[in-house]
Amino acid sequence: MIVVNLNIRGMGGGCIKSRYVNNIIAYEGEEFVCLQETKLKVLTEAKCFSVWGNNRVGWLHNEGVNGCGSLLSMWNLDSFSYASHVMGKGFIAVFRDHLKSNLRCVVVNVYAACNMNDKRLLWGELSNVKVASQDHVWCFCGDFNVVRRRSERKGIRVGDEHASEIVGFNSFIDANLLVELPIVGKRYTWF
Amino acid sequence: MLVSEEWLVRWPMSKQYVQRREVSDHCAIVLKSVDKDWGPKPFRTIDAWLSEKGFWEMVKDKWLSYPMKGNALVNIKEKLKSLKGDLKIWNRDVFGNIHTQKKAILQEIEELDCKDCVDDLRDTDRLKRSELVSRLLETDKKL
Image (spheres, chains in turn blue, yellow):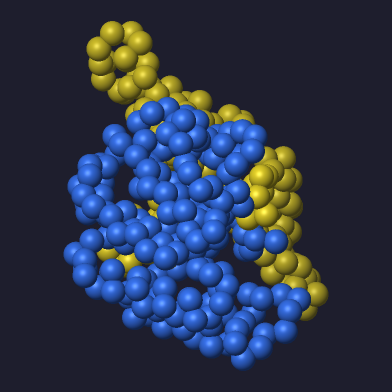
């Protein structure tokens, strides 16, 4: 299964961003794409088709609050059969049957707000969603806006708030028996 | 990206591949599980084999020993395939690893030289040493 993830930082305007995403999809093989911060109030069908490259695409858009925390999940209609979805503040969980592997998959697209309280609520809500469907195969991707280790933050002082954020994120991962996948290429994907 | 353990059971080679940063201040990440199947392996030889004593005789004997299969084209393909396997064995058992060979020769020379320091070498040892040196030169040619 192939999942593409990108904080796109706005999808309005020209077609450069669409073409960038489209190139990755075309190269890697289209299965599932998670975008964060689309910053769009309304997402048209035409926009989705142009990002995807053709019309064999299903999608869910979470416009967020005032454009903040907007999310877009897209998937290949030929790779998955319909099941259901759950949408909430800062996440879209798409439940689908992956046809090639014959597995019930959930791909959760996450955008965590920067403040700690919202994060705590989000981890709680995501845990509830996962507990309700234990027999599925899960993938959480998106922009978590948090690190797992102090050493991952460079150039800024790590305060108490950061420290408890790290603890909160790690206990979410542990409680839900999640595994952080190894990274090939750059260690940091944001700068 | 985070996945459940079941995901890793189904796609154990899953990794995050970071893409070039282009249109956002974030890099796109591609999660995929790359299987180790690199497709069919080509037929290859090492130049140093060709000048090795007995190599050509071995190839000729083997080539003639393979049974004919199908039409001419299929036959050649099948024979090359069998030869590939035999070359692999020959390389391991007869030709050996040049680097290991060189190391072994150097060590033997060293031992003889040490002996020479303590006590003059006998003629047989002297002969052996010059033989080792010429073998060393042969090995160096192959590298």
